[in-house]
Length: 580
Image (cartoon, rainbow, N blue to C red; front, side, top):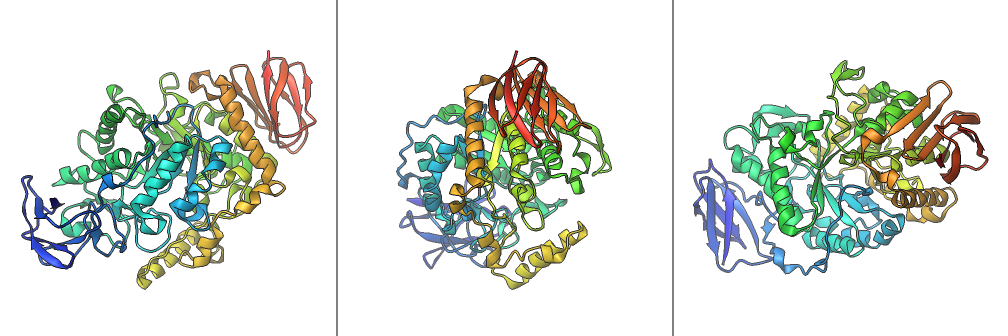
């Protein structure tokens, strides 16, 4: 027998619409919950809920939305799918290489099944886990995924819940872990019916996207459970290996035990049950090490966080950009600092913010693998006016220098899809909201935002234009073309080198050393007896080393010359050397 349940604590009456039949619901055993037994309902049965005689709405915990976010939910039995990953024992975050992808633009078809066809490329590249942008159901056919409204349901155009399970199963069969980007700080603007069911939101706080989710005021216990149960479902029922938590600085929680701390504790308990590593990776703008510090030490106990300061230091130095938030970066000395601590701003002055920012990190106790670092990601590309990749503005020689530093760092490196071959396709902001008024508002808002930052309106693609989506799809034919083929080989060799030499994946930040000369334009990253010597100048340079160079493990350009305590390098080149 199937029992339909829903939380609606302020409702006076509730009905379930099941295959066209209206069924009165009764209060359940737990305060605020309603339920009804439906003997004939089973996997594949459509249903919806009506609050106080209102319109039928999807279940706030719907697992399947085949008719879109405005249509009825469909019962989904998690046990119906047959898994083949019974021997999968997970992938530890320490030492891993991540690969961020958007299902809708990773392939021409933009589905889970199409993405499976490209997984062998990732295995050959050497990555350990894919990080998938949000797949929660949202209004429209295509979008980035951050406008999800049914967070338990998988977007149907991608392939729905079974499609996602096939993708995860296929990844595990190839030794690849899967991390999912999830959004617990806001819901999208279209198809968001949660407020009709109860106080899921609060007016006490605001986020950049509107009212905040209610994690700490009246009735917040069940809202917290709605979010935490979702995280557990992905890992338990979809066999995910980790979650990336979007913009946790906009999760506003004033309770003694923060939502993130509670979630980390419950994920830790699930880890013990499933007997494989599970991890939570936060995106945060706070530069606060308490996110990744152990709960015993007063932290939240999350596994890792994205480290934007490292990206900013790399981007500003390689691309010579210092507008906007890059104003605090750009010097080689700042780049050197970023490889010894992920927080360049650590309680220090931020020109961009016009205030002090961040908190110091204890490099002796917090390992570097807890910080996910990157030359590019979906935000740093897609939130540029034209969605232009770093490869559109920086020569390949400089990209090689940046990637060498990234993969030889003490951090957890991550690639954005196509970065490994210097994809020429942009990754732009695209939406497909069916509502004309919302579409117009999104279009106008996007252009206004960039106009305020000094971009011309003509530089901003129309998010609703299907051509914006098509421009953003990867062109897999580029892999075998000149320039792209060499960069792909460079990334394969870097990842293989990281695997071969323990010094290059050693997460101890206190063991990392750097040397640099801002005026001359060189930087050396030391990892044990391995040195990553970089010449970022426009002329040939002798780069000093701490010892006598003994051999070259990998170099981006020929013509290097060894001298005592020095290696001479071509402009915009890098050599990874051993020294004695």
